[in-house]
Length: 589
Image (cartoon, rainbow, N blue to C red; front, side):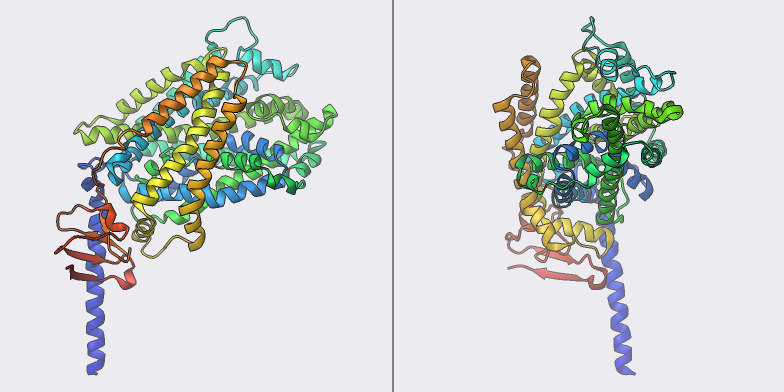
């Protein structure tokens, strides 16, 4: 009985201590953002899990999942390219995306203030990320806007591009082969409409945005299922699908260009590096399991691209049969031309359902693009709001988002001109592809040296109570080697290719403008490197199992890497595992 009483007493003491430890962790997690930057995020809205999950899925699944993914697979050996894509997705894109999510939840700050909180010298990374997102948003809205004239045209009988889909695209929509070289008013109207929709969705809070996102995420999924079923009935569909999944050119895996395009598609699809995952995760609940969420988002993103590929290649197979050409020849017409020329020309093959299928396809593209545009607009707006709050300025969200959307609209007007599509293509190459790879490399270096793998594990465990990064050795490999080395290598490779081969030889002025934009973004990323101040992250103990609270409440990033903590400092060590939670008072000599 005496032994039993001692056991019960010890267990009660342990439970009481565990409760106090969890309470301290909760208080610290609640107040962390205000400790970082003068309370910049103390009034942040909070998303439910479904709002957060649908927002991330909508952000990840974009237009590139339909036309760009299929083009990469068709060009680089079918199933062999799909294998290269999967490897890059597992080892590079998904881990980096997950790390951004963890940082956002841990700091409860948007991207730019988050990098400053890690260490002030990384303000240039945050500014360049903001600038890149702003530029990409300006032309991405135009890409989505291309679908609006096609949606309207799909309601006409017969379809307006029926005679010559290529001429309709280049002359009627883009105006590249017309007499006028100024603004194309159809595109201007589309741009204004989209900018207004985006502003209205962001301006009135997260609840409205989440309701819109539910529709724009679910609708494309339903539409792509309908398209897969219907296109499977087309003559020649089997040949297209067989080319998609049945052709495996193993020799392609030895080609560096295949891996470069596969990785580029991964980064373009899941879109780490923009700071959007950080910003969106800063609004999520502090106990959400981000490891599970990242896996779900990545899986859904890949599955959507693969399933959409069946519909696209079924239509390509049908076109190849009707034109008497090889599937490879038709499939090689990639990029925007795949959607607005090749697929548009396939709509009459649906006979009486041509108009309905055309509406479905272009509405699907519209909603896919809208989700990503929402996410980037939210990233820009949240960053500006956080910066204003740090300076004691509070403005309604509708005002901040209005200024941001007007700025994006003005910057994006050149894309509505006759040469706008050429400008868009160059800017996408130099900023949306090349600079994105550089930012991913830069970001990975900052996470490695100033945030640390142990802190990532602690932040995840703090939210879930038990989960850690798994599988361990794959995470080590991705964190310390694959992400930084591959992103830097591909960035240098693409810049070298653009220098030696040129990107748009027929339009040197537009290409020079692309180089200038890239140089400006690179210069901005280096701002603040001379700053020597410490970040405001709370330090970890030597085991990496919990935050190390210093007397002054100000942590040193060096301590996370096992550096010397200073003489005579008194610390409290807190484990983040509930089953081993304990409080230890210690003195260091």
